[in-house]
Image 1 (cartoon, rainbow, N blue to C red):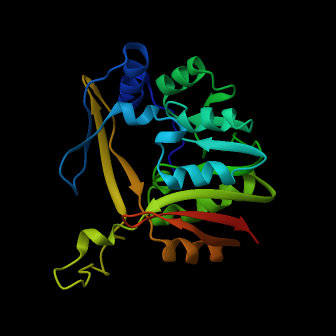
Image 2 (image 1 turned 120 degrees about the vertical axis):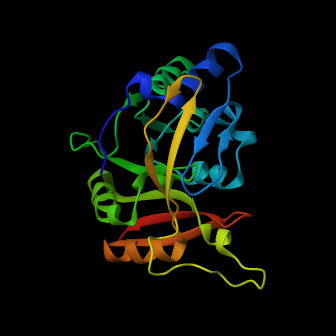
Length: 243
């Protein structure tokens, strides 16, 4: 499992976030993958307020209780919404530029921190992994490491609130059947690379996981998975509780 922190010259998303924060606009944040056509992330969407958030995110913020860990805090939009709700939150990100912006925007506890760093041993009542938060796991083979880390960080009775998407719709045939190669890699394992202006990030693995597979892994490592809410396009919010 990757435990590194990005350097500023390899931090395209952080650069876009910093530009938008400083100037009210940003260039094109390009997203490349060997499996998909090139896409882009509008920087403006990374600065949405509570009223602009999808209902899955709103529900996750509503359910978050106690001391909350916001993993991949980005511009701080979720942490700021939680602070407005008078909830205690610690935001972490591996992007140095994003953490600078979070602090400037008023996130009280924003840290340049990799979730999987062995030295990160704080404890929390709720761990939030939003905006396809399962992606941070990278590959199914990293599930054991992920669940061990959740056990380490969660207080008794604590929960993980995680959203993801089932990418099976990409393999749907005209007759409604799904043409998935079961002998190949799991269909939700994707590689991405981001580029912003002259800042080119390294390629990274990102995991989209269907709820049934998530539930099976959760049960294997002592967690109960509950489907909280489904979105409109194969996305969902799940709650993981330690048995």
